[in-house]
Image 1: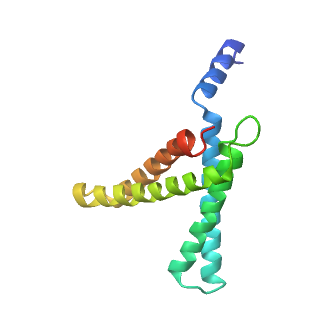
Image 2 (image 1 turned 135 degrees about the horizontal axis):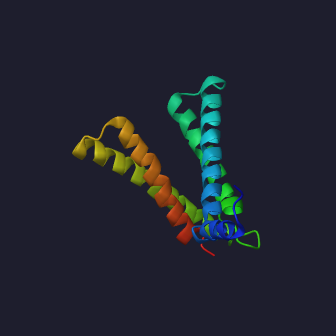
Length: 145
């Protein structure tokens, strides 16, 4: 059965109302940042034979660059193709990034120590809540037009 125009119009309205395309772009940027993190960390560790912690940190920093520029130019750009200056957006992004780390680690430790949440469930909760909180902070503060 072919969807009739009113149904498609409602679907488009829902996508626009909840900004689904922006959420999908945020997910794509996040996946690209995670892949960059992993690729750089593994490359630095296995090819350059740098110790594990600095290797992972180098990957983390590379992923953060992908995340920032992807967020700035792809996820949160406005109709004019930009969303303010880097001098305003970058420090805000860095703060959101640090808050995200604190949320992730704090939530994980709290759920583990106070509530004995099993590891796998704890990781899942942290993976869902941290990016959600960061998306909201980025959308309504760091990259707000």
